[in-house]
Image 1 (tube, rainbow, N blue to C red):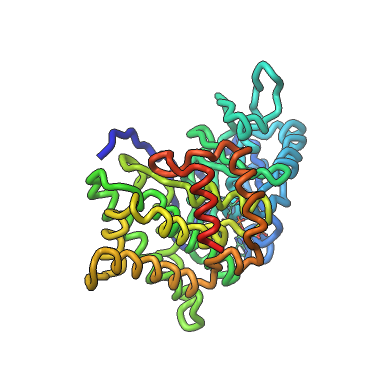
Image 2: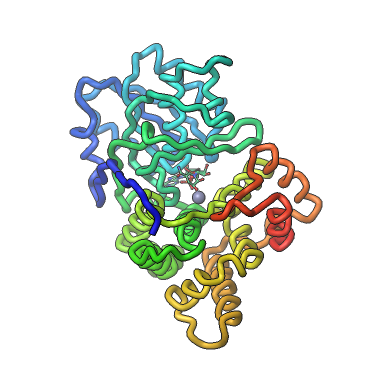
Length: 389
Ligand code: NZQ
Ligand code: ZN
C-alpha cells in the first residue's frame, strides 16, 4: 500500500427528514446564501423544507446554476455576496450546484496573483488560494461525491476544468434519499454510472496490495450493479432502500476513502470532460463511452486488476485469463446498456471526424500524460477514442 494521509471532516446527516439538521449546523448569526439550480427543488418540496429549517436564519438566494456549471453564471453570485455580506453558502442540488458553490466560495475571497485577480486562474493555472467561504450541502442527486469532497469542475467557453482544495469541502452534507424520488430515469442512470466509474478509476490500476481499498471498492461496484437497475424498474423505483444504497455508494465512491493509499487513473474522466466541453454530453454519458475503450486499450497494463475485477465483481471463473477479461469488459458494457447510457461515440452521433478536436483540447488543457502511470499520451488517447467509435 502507498503512504497516505486521510481526513474527511464533512459531517453527514443521512436519512429521511434530515434536512431539518441544517437549522443547527449553520450558525444563527451567519448571513447565508442558498444556491441552487434550475428549480427542481421548488417542485419537489426540497426548497420548502430548506426554508422551514432556515426560519431563524438570515438568508438570501442565488439560483440558475446549470448542469456543468459555467464561470459566467457563477461569477454573477459575487454581486449579492458583496451587497449582503454573505459569509456562508448552502448548496442545494446535484453535483453541479455543489461544485458551483465551491467555485463561488473560493472566488468570493480570492486575492489573485501577480498577473491579476481573475478567479478563473484557480482552474486554468491551478492557482492556489488560501481562503474560501464555508459551505454546507443538501444533496438531491447521488452521483459525484461532491457533497463530501474538495473537488469542483467548472466550464468556461467550452473548457471544462477541475480544481481541488480542502478549503471548499462542505462542512456538512444532508443526504435524504427520499428527495431523489423526483429524479428522471436519465439522472438516476447518470448518477449510478458516475459513481461506478469513480470507483473504477481508483481500483482498476495496478495492485499495491491495498486489500481494504480493493474490497471496499468491489463492494461499492457490486452494490451499484445490483441496485442501479432497480432504481429504473417500475416495480422497485419507488423503493427508498434502493435509493438509500445508491446514495451512500455514490458518496463513499468519491469521499477520499477508497482512493487513499492506492494508485488512481482518472483518464476516463479527463477524456470525458473534453466530450462535455466540446459537445455538451452529460458527464456520466461521456464516461460510459470512454471507459470500455480504456479497458480494451489498456488491457495489458491493467491485466492483474482486470482479472481481479472479473472474478470478484462479476464472479467469472471459467476460461483462461484473456477470456475472463473480455467477458468482464462485455459485462461492464451490458451493465451500462441496462442503465440506458451510451457506450460508443456513434451512440451520441459523433464519429472519427470529431476526434481531432478532442485531442487538440486535451493537449491545450495539458492532459498529455494521463493514467496511473502518466503514460497515456495523446497518441494513446486517440487510440482510446478510436476504439470508442
Ligand atoms: O438544476 P435543477 O433544476 O436542480 O435540475 C437538476 C439538473 O437539471 C436535476 N436534479 C437534481 N436533483 C434533482 C433533479 N431533478 C429532479 N429531482 C431532483 N432531486 O438534475 C440535473 C443534473 O444535475 P447535475 O447537478 O448537473 O448532475 P450531477 O450531480 O451528475 O453533477 C454533474 C456535474 O458534476 C461534475 C460533473 O463534471 C458535472 O459538471 N463532477 C463533479 C465531481 C466532484 N465534485 O467530485 C466529480 C465528478 O466526476 C464530476 O466531474
Ligand atoms: Zn464523475
